[in-house]
Image (cartoon, rainbow, N blue to C red):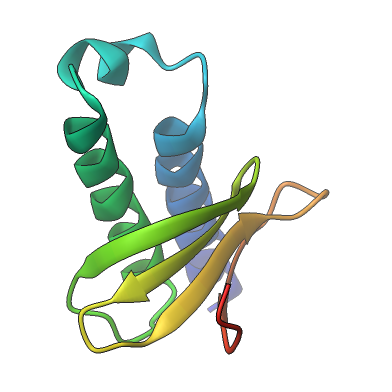
Amino acid sequence: MRIASICVLYVAGLIFVQACSEGNYEDAAIATDDAEHAEIVKRDLFAIISLQGAPCQRVIEYDVQDELDYVATCETGDRYRVHVSSEGRVHVNAHEGTE
């Protein structure tokens, strides 16, 4: 069970870092405008939330809190904070705040 958890965190971390990295020029070529970039980030946030087992059918919007720190709003109205800790671990927590 521990190995499966580590694998899920590793994959989620890779997806998250890919979406959030400022130096990711491969996605920059694909995302020719802000709307396309926003869709890529929404898709990656959805993948991370789903991999952590939290209920979410689709991320409809997100707010950037800080570098590698987002609050994602799902279609159902559920909100999750997705961030990378100082240890490099990806965390998904239910978010109760309005900001």
